[in-house]
Length: 284
Image 1 (cartoon, rainbow, N blue to C red):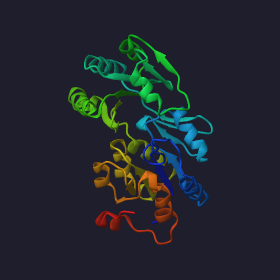
Image 2: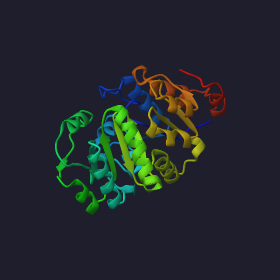
Image 3: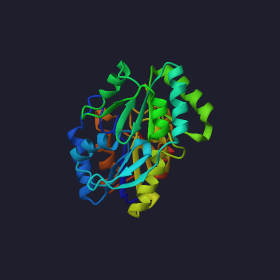
């Protein structure tokens, strides 16, 4: 199979907790692009927070941001797709989270909007050394009702994130998409928004068939694109659900799994087929 588009999650896939990209990963992405393979980053991060990674990797294809809520060109800034939440529903979600003692963040126009600057925000900002504009709005629910966000994120201890996800999914049903992107992060977006739906949109725009697309990720928010792609790969550090859903499991982020996958599946003359991988669950 000749693959033409590679979609890469960022956190836990091309970078670990230190936010550094291993040289072998960078070199592998460069080699793939030199072969004519299109490369995109698919992340929950804002567009502005994704740009530094794209620039470090010389990626010039449209980027998938906000869990699929936006597809945007890193060279021209053109927005190819952007889906915001219903403002009223977002306001309701914020009130439910605050009553539960959970800290919400609303993403509006590339800014992080919060009701106060708390320790949870400082925790979150450690993942954003590039710097992100923060707006303080004590009445955050009213603010998002008038300025619908692209997504909401909330921060809590892992067990509490899980219980809130269950509660929010039961409350909003198919009115909002509810997912987990990290042990400490839960997220909400407009219904139908996912990395998978955005990857489909991008592939169609580029004229690339599904079977020629590879997607690599490690967490729950990566499941839709791993399931949609012609070849879905799970990092060795991926959660069990992603490992189970993927066609194959590759080395971990610490072991430069993305570089291994590029060499093994995209550049090698002896690529294993999706069917073989699904049957044997090969681990790198």
